[in-house]
Length: 112
Length: 115
Image (cartoon, each protein chain N blue to C red):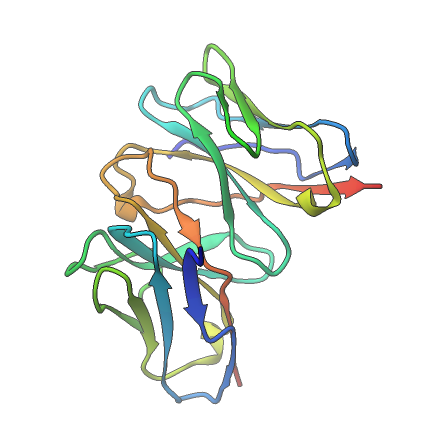
């Protein structure tokens, strides 16, 4: 699996958009980009994933650069309940056991 | 709409005791997984079951056994608990595993302390 690099922490204001960057410069052509988050004391929560096109769902938008070497997760209107650790994961087509490799993630604090 | 349910939520054991962690999903998923998360660390895969009737070792299988009881349920057993197994255990499931487009859905974890 390609390695990902995320900032260790960031703050954002409640009601504003939160833009979370992720670098994955060694990504292969058939690897997907996944985003999960983990709210304190809860299990990881799937947010969104994509291959090359931008994706949007009810939780967030995922913007992947044309060269696929980086991506940005956008939470359009951050709320206090979005405070969590956000993980960017790149997964190979046939990852052993289909396992997810969680790195350090970005600790996001949404402030009133 | 329960998703993935884990029981118990908390457990304290003495060294050498055995116990089984239960996991059930109601999403008709084929694949199920057991991870552990230690403080300040990411998740590590213990065992997985790609489909009903199959199980395979993950990164850290030593000291654990699993049973895929049916399509819904996947249990994790500690035969002789050790303090190094103190951790938070997460169960997850996905629709399938034959491709990277299968997101995994997680339960809320079992917090296990071994004294």
